[in-house]
Amino acid sequence: MIVRGRAWPAALLALQFAIVGAVLAEDAPSSVGEQLILNATYSLDASLAAFSRDYSGDTRHVDDTASETWTRLQFESKSDLGAGLDLRVKGFAVLSTQEDERHGFFSEPRFRKDRPRAFDLTELKLRAARDSHDLYLGKMLLTAGVSNIFSPTNRFNNVDLSNPLHPLEMGVWAGRANFFIGDDTLSLAVVPWQDRVARPADSSRWLGPSSSSSSGTSLFNLGNWNYNAEERYAKSDLRNAGYLMHYSGSRAGFDFFGISHLGASKYAVLRKEVSGSTVTYSKETPQAFSLGGGISATSGAWSYYGEAIPQATVGNRDEDFLKYVIGVSYRDTTIAELLGFEEIMPILEQANEKTFGTQDSSRYVQNSRAVRLGRDTIFFRLGLKKSDKLSYSIYSTRNFVAETASNSADRSSAVGLGSEYKINDSLKFRADLRIFYGESNTQFGRWARNDHIEIGMTYSF
Image (cartoon, rainbow, N blue to C red):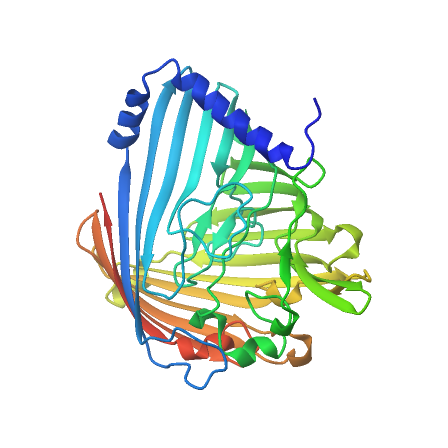
């Protein structure tokens, strides 16, 4: 039987639950449920952010209350189903005072809603463990990269950015096989359909002032807002599925990986349709091919790493480009003791992008450059460990190009100061000050009114 169109994701999902059902039929369902309850671990993350400015006078409605709270309860568990099979679950519940941030429960396969869920699963996967390989089916995280701060190759999961202060990496529905080759691992995955990537609500302060989007582009809305562009998704069939191959390994003193991907690009473009006198616009993520890799080496207290991934888009529907990052970190105790600390650890990364092919299709009128972050960016983080309980951090991100070609000389940056106090292994408190700079058309400049202080706590149990 040939599976076509919408039947393809439905068939894969049905197969997944058929396998789970067959396994559970041989074990008392209450036993599996009891295992999930007994094996569960939880983490409660609560914070309060206080903002220094409002959005008075803006042409759109903005929820600019002086403070907002954000609370997440995360859980993780597994159940042994026998015969080398286990079921793994990871999810969360989020409660936020930000207006209209979340709606409903559970994001099903082919999720198309414009708001993320208040209760959702990050992972729901069935694993079959064998001596030479593991097989996975369900919702899972597909991770890659060696960088500490910014990784251009770690781009195959969905990310919930409804509150950029608390991004949530979400798994994708897929089938995956991991093959063990000595100390190395070869991973092959098939992602049958696209899900929507969550962005802030229309009333969110994280969309910036109206002028930051109507003048050109927005970090979350590609294209002029006047286009009123809708999102388009490719049909869910074998031709439009995502195919990912990832090879990783370790040798004395260094780690490495290689990766290839054929499927939907991470970055959206703007499509124009003309029917008589009617012109409509839509966002879509075109099919693209990527091939990249990275390496991380350690020498004493120093660590050096780099990764790169080029992308060539099918049908010239977007620019072809190479994204890369190089970084270095250092762990020191000698100088730290002179400064009154136990340890200091600076991390410096340079991210960049090289374009080698232009968008050349009559139906596509805007490329993805505006939303490709890390095109010429410096990332810096300095960790200062005062004791086992108290630590501080200084961090910054500096963009040297704007998102719009007409203002290519504009810059934007974000800087922050943080501290963390660890009561014990289960409870810690933190505080952060974050400030944003730049013109309104830039990544951080559109957040210039969002300078804030945030306090929070994390409790694990």
